[in-house]
Length: 185
Image (cartoon, rainbow, N blue to C red; front, side, top):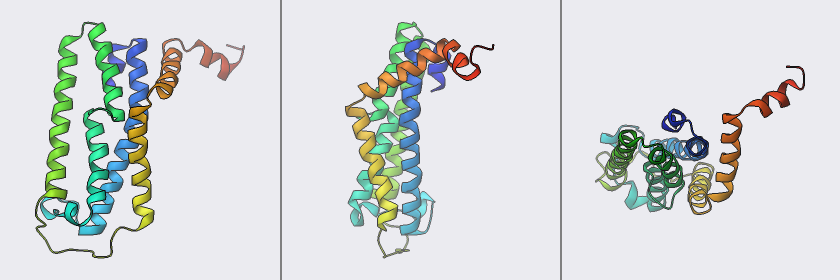
């Protein structure tokens, strides 16, 4: 998001606004999944987690969707957000920053897969904390946000149009100033 602000072009700002939509959903979802894993195993520490995939494969999948989206894997929402900002950087010939952003994406993918492997795939290192399962009010918002992440990635154009409109207003705030202050500037 900061990279798009740094490039400060209409395309880069469009990508930044789109990235905001994506990031709010994905990060919220990851925090909610963290709460569910705490509910299931009584800890937030990776060293105390493991084996969730075997008992709750849907939860493992629901973690992978926002995790991979955060890294920018297609066809998820994060891919399109990163693609637009990277394209803006390439058009602006900011090759070093583009390479840095791509490297950060790879490192994000590495960290997300490491978390998945430790919390979901590895053998459970401590006894089960909770055998009660996942309450529907806990899993439902996670499921809905995962679906939103996929849908935003697959049908990005309408949200991107909104992002372009917001970016044009950020580039020329006169319309916003007039709407807020009226003709009395």
